[in-house]
Image 1: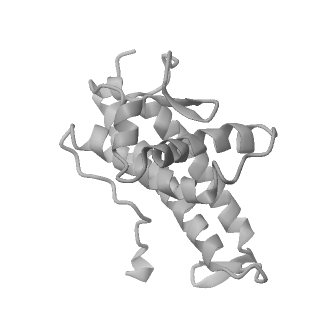
Image 2: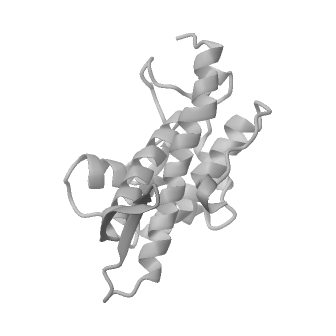
Length: 193
């Protein structure tokens, strides 16, 4: 399906950066969970116009950040041309015509080998980490199924995957197109600059 330049610009300037911010939120959630004491439920407050509008348990934020990051991470992996089968990373076959993919920008899909090689650490850890996003999205969020093995698909792997997906998107989409790289992080509000 041919894509207009306006649609391509929207995907590059808005849709993909939005999804990358969700991945960053995932890493923040993992970091917050790791730092807090098991005896402390944690808390959060949200200010609107300088007034506290909402307060609650930190799980109200961290759980949402984990889930949204996982779902957007899965979408980005599929956009790049990757999928998962039985926990193993595979190259995606037959995306729907309405799905955006690298080919819409005249770029080749990312191969399994490229995705794994992009990680500077152990190849098995790279594959488990990228596969963990897909496994969590399918079995932990979209469906209620068998429990997920925390040794194989734990939060450590989710954090590695989020950073890896960001690097793959930058390296296989933005750099080849000569576009500015979306940062890995939240944009600062004017109030906190």
